[in-house]
Length: 380
Image (cartoon, rainbow, N blue to C red; front, top):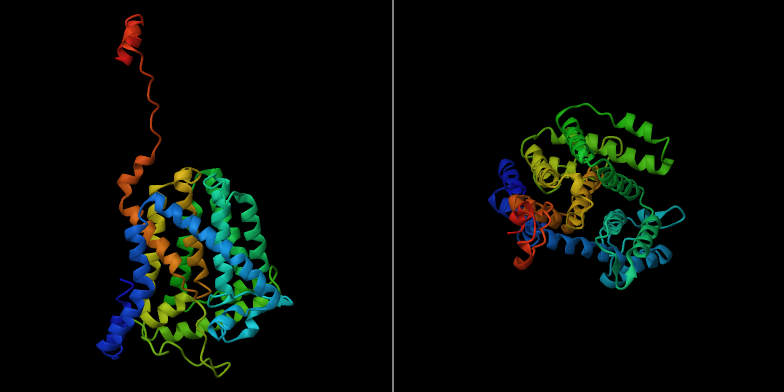
C-alpha cells in the first residue's frame, strides 16, 4: 500500500501517469524492495539473529570512522566522493567539537545508527545471546559503542537509547510489553492531532523541555515545530492523497520568507501523499511490531532464541519515534520490518518454541520387571 501512494498522489494532482509510475518506482526501490527482501529471506529467528549481530558489527565498524571525524571534522565523504553529505557544514559543529557524518546523510543518522547498534549490543550481552566476538568479550565492545555514541553529540540518540533500553529491561523485570503498545498508540495520537486537527501543543512541549535541555537544542526543536505547523496547514488543503512531488507540499514560511523545511518523515509523508500515505507508513511500520509482541510476549524476551528479534522490534519502534522529528531513511530498518512481518506470518510454526517437557529416562527391559507395577507402566 505504501508503494502505490505516489501513483495515486500524482494522478489526483494531475501530474500524469508517467510521473506516477516514476515516483512509484522510486518508492518501491526505497521502501518495497528492502521490505520484501526481509520478508523472503529473514523470516525466521536464526536469520534475524544474524541480522542483529550484523547491525552490531556495523556499529563497531563505524567506531574508528566516527572517532576520526570527531577529531578531524566530517571529511571522509568529501575525500572519497568529492562533496559533503550535507550542504550545511555548520550542523556538524556541536559543543566546541564535531559531530561525525561518515557516509550517511547527516550526523543525526549516524547517531541513530550507533544508538541502534548499542541497544542491540546491550541486549545480546545481557541475555547471553552473544558472549564473545572475535574472541573479545562483548561487554568491552558494547562499552566502546556506548562511548562512541556519547561522542557523536546527538541528544535525540541519547534519549532513544534511554527509552529503548528502559523498555527492554522493564519487559524483562515485569514481563510485560505494555510500554511498547503505549508508545505506538501515543505516536498514533500525536500524528492524528497534528494532521487532522488544528490543535497545536508544541509550545507547551517546548516550554516543558526547556528545563531539561540547553537553549540551542530547544531552539532547534522549536524551529522544527514552527515549520511543521506551516506545512501541516498547507497539507490539509489536499488531505487525502497530498500534493505529490516537485516540492508542491512545501510552502513559504511567512515568518522567514523562505520555503518551510521538512525535517520529519511524517510531515513529508502527509504533505506528499496525504492521509493515505501517512496511515500506510504508520501501519506498515507498527503493525508487524504489535503483532510480534502478541506472538512473543515480554516473558520470552530474555530467552536466547527470541532476544534478537525482541530487541530488533524495539529498535524499529525507536526508529519510528525518531521519524516524528527527523527524516533519515535507512533500508536496514525496513529490512527489519520485513523480517518481523515474515515471522508474524509464520506465527503458528514459531510458537513451537515453548518449553518442551523433559523426556523420561528409559529403563532397560531386563530391569523393568523388578520395578513396582506403577513405575513399570511409565517406562514401558
